[in-house]
Image 1 (tube, rainbow, N blue to C red):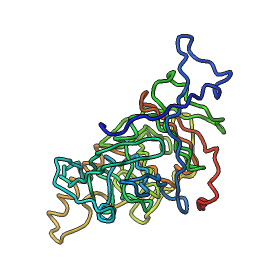
Image 2: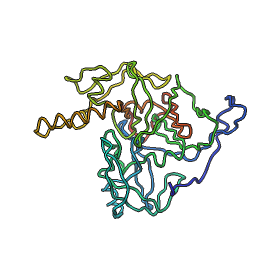
Image 3: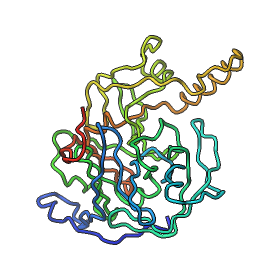
Image 4: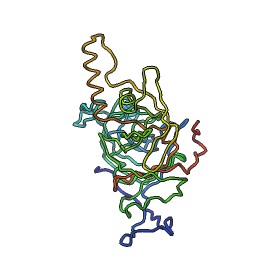
Length: 325
């Protein structure tokens, strides 16, 4: 990231009165940026930004490969795509070269960058595995920028905060947690934030997917890993989903068709291609945690520690935003 730089850091030492720190560490959290996001009907949140001086909204995307613009947004901003060496991957991890646009000036809150180059994709969709992008934004705000900071987001209030990573390890819980605090390791898999979760007592990878309206699981994973017959259903409800010490009850998942499940009419070929998709799913068994689940949570993604700290939300929706049904 040669383009975004820190403009301000606001110390939050006062928020930690009485909190025990390791004797050798006296580095409190330092706030870099604070941004009010927007959302509609509990769906994905969008981040207000300026691109070449014009107001735009980018969908917050923790499961997107890189920050990117949609083709329509690039056209509306009079940005001419050019061929590039940028590569994004499809559902099976296959590389696809994409065009890019040059942005002279980009700002988000207190952060500012110049002469940035972003990929351009149809509908501003993501480049990694997972569902389609959402939120109605002009593209995705994703991990290539987020990972420069610790990212704190309370989806109850749609408040996004970026903190410096230079702080005491584990000293991040500046809000009053309404119950258990879940702490789990973060793995970045193909440009996506993933964490270990327990679904009805079964260990599986959870994808933190802020650009997906709903949570989902592939049919083969539901059947072979979670032990649920999906032949007559398009959804399932897990009694419990555990993220570290935090437990969520009665979580619904949409059952997604397996990769390569659409037929071409050639039965032998279709079976062979579908098996390839299922083999890929089984090699990386996971569930997507979308905004229907995340809207209830406060997440602190400590990328400097590769840890996720998660509690129930403490915020309330801003007056201008639609409340979650």
